[in-house]
Length: 357
Image 1 (cartoon, rainbow, N blue to C red):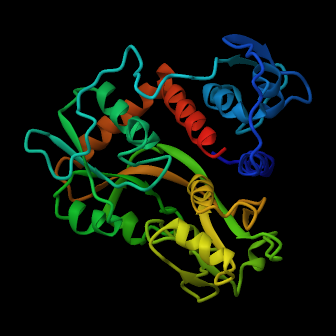
Image 2: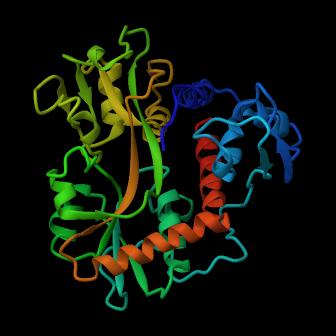
């Protein structure tokens, strides 16, 4: 789904506000009601009117995607304004079906018919210490629980992401892995990841931003502004968006790429002037910025560098690849149609943004 600039600027303003210590309003919510969009409305003004808090726009967005034009509201359309989820972390939805223990499994489980592999230190998406072990982890679990012909499954954890695809998925130590970004296989069908793996339907789409030194003069109006710069991206993150057919920044040595272990390392390099910018997805970058105590020294630019989608991945040589992928996609569709997808995403977004204050 295409995202317009106003949407990402709005999302950026939320990040800047939270990173500046702006606390949300405590106004009483007017929710669980229908609202007819008026001319001049946007998601932020609607959230302000109903929740007294512009930062809660994601609750409305994820609940009403079928009534929106991408990220924009349409005058005359009716939106449902849900009450923001305030579920305690220990609780679970009353209709949730729990099929697995929540303790991370370090290895393949002999009794499981489907073994999935993920890793930690990737807030808000996956980490054993996050609520429900992260947003993406909960979506994957929920999808498998409502999929047709469900099978016993287990999720294994390995923080060395470099080992996930090869050897662990390629050698069938695990059946599927998540979350992985998908390259543009239509743009470059010969890309190794396109040749070797099948991808599920998108679990979530996220913007990639340039985090730069405050007052350092780095700008991004077009790709020409990036040529000759030194960019940082942690080893965990793919670099497809930096090396598309239109960019070829890495293949043609148009930029210098530095790849330390973690996003926090990139942000410290930005603050110290060792790199020009860190190219990070918005959520990873905002989380690392707070964790490293770099507010005021490093900030995201307004224009997104790119957008990536996160998926479950499986080797094309896996003998049950088609059936496992069908099961995952069918479960995801059920989550979206039932509204549970919106509930899960909204709840984790609330927890994530509140954690940045």
